[in-house]
Length: 566
Ligand code: ATP
Ligand code: MG
Image (tube, helix red, strand yellow):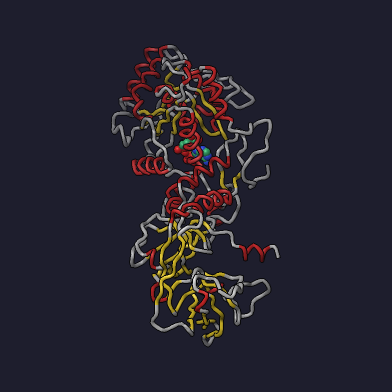
């Protein structure tokens, strides 16, 4: 599949038409494996905010558990005290709930530090683990290469009693950070490098945000992860492909400890999205160095950024469904596919309103001065239950500047000198006057309206091709409208040496526009379709006297399309 082509993989040998994870659970349930139980977990490390890639994992773990009447836990993988923070943990909970999922249990790997320690003692007693005094550097050298077996640590045969004693003293903080590690005793000649006596514990004499000073050793990911799954009685442990080589080790820890459970790990392809980066380290850098305004900057691929932009959880779940789950295909998904899912969802739910983001003033020369009338407008033609509202109309209006051309090309059906168009839901108007400033810029149009065309139809049956949106000048509410574009210019910025310099300088533009008065009290987060412009959401910065809207996604613009295709 060419990179960037959204959707369905065509890799027939590796991928089943449906979702291979669902199928393998189905098989287990049918065969009565795990007594027919399905228990999954979503295991984020609280060292950053969740992004759309995590949404795929959440959708898989929570969604599949739901499908099979099982349970899904939220488990913080908080084994790395230096990078983790409660702010991140809280944000993660918020995002999972926002996506529409409820965890059966809320756990932390740190809840299991005691149990994991006991498992370590058990492995030592079984002569399957030892305390090693090699430096990090030597551990690496002793490990060998893919072609050559490693050589054993001099401590590999350390007597059990001595191992147990050292372990306890490591835990109590008697040794400096680099002095000892605890390693599993597996196979220094294994073709799988992960099996060459991997680390289980290292000394880190730092406090942990949840366990405080209780521990001076912290478990490694590979050791803590599978055993945490076992402790929680997880049946299916889904993770991304980069952990494929870790599976053998996952099984080894589970099989050699008396956890009593047999969770099994399955890998799927991670989601990569075009025109953005998805590693937490890079997202953190964007935030820390001020390239974006924060984790919830609407240009970020984070769930908090997408939420602020006005993307709905339904659209994200629908997007996950559409991209499907591939076993191997790690290619880039076109962000246009996400936009499509967002549009489909907002099309159903967003009320249609009128806003002008690049205003040009129009005066209806033959409309009575000082008169105002209420125009009936349908809130959402896709949803009859959405009802009607009244929008004030008067002699002075704003229209969109690009809805007028003085010398229009063929097939331009909007306003131009002498041309007649419909003002949406209101009247037919004809352009009779063009006012310019000294620089030749059009600053005002004069039009005449046909009073018999109220509601937007002429009784004599004459047709117009163009329909423009408008906002009445005396009723208009000023609004800052923020338009967003891709954060990165390159389709795949991640491999670029200088990925930061690929940031799109036009990724955000702010416009001073006007919106119809019905939007004055719209609460933060509420979505609207600004007719002919796109979908917009009220930003949390918005106040009734200074409204702020974010463009969530544009509409397909038939004019722009026609121009492109010539
Ligand atoms: P980092 O980007 O810092 O390496 P991570 O993406 O692995 O971190 P975790 O907090 O460990 O972050 O992720 C939690 C879960 O989400 C893991 O099971 C991980 O495999 C999954 N996940 C992370 N990124 C993606 C992605 N792009 N697509 C699908 N799943 C993902
Ligand atoms: Mg990770």
